[in-house]
Length: 207
Image (cartoon, rainbow, N blue to C red; front, side, top):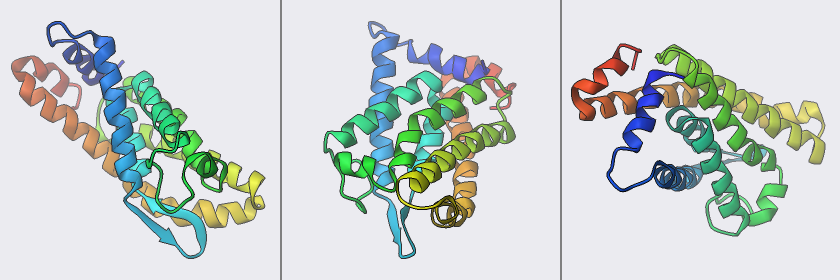
């Protein structure tokens, strides 16, 4: 496990009288809120039913910063909120269960697994921008693969799915991968600064 995320778990448990489980639960709730906010930063595209959103950035960032377990819980909670009818999905869709069953359903359902994979890989590599970007890229591949597969099986052929649901989004997803890696490193550096001298150990790990 990478030292920066070990330290996060340690610092999460520090407030007196508050259990680590409760704090991880709070982190999962706040993570689901972040994804919901990013989902509403959405731009519809005329040639595809898949809009441009910041959701992928939020999903990858949660994986890198919360670790696989808490990130998976946060994204599962997000899907439950959306399925229950809360306005957490992109506004360019019907909302609720219908959005999960629509052309973007594969992307949505991939989020817990993509975040967990990014977190799992990040914990097992030295914390640098490159390793975080690689972990985030793996999560992004999961999102694109499951999203395109769902699109192809439920709605279109594989070739059409790639043209409408993968290739146009690769440049933007590359930027989101880099942004999530940079944001995660910035988060850990800021946390270490507030922790004082005890955080210096994590800076030696590249954070």
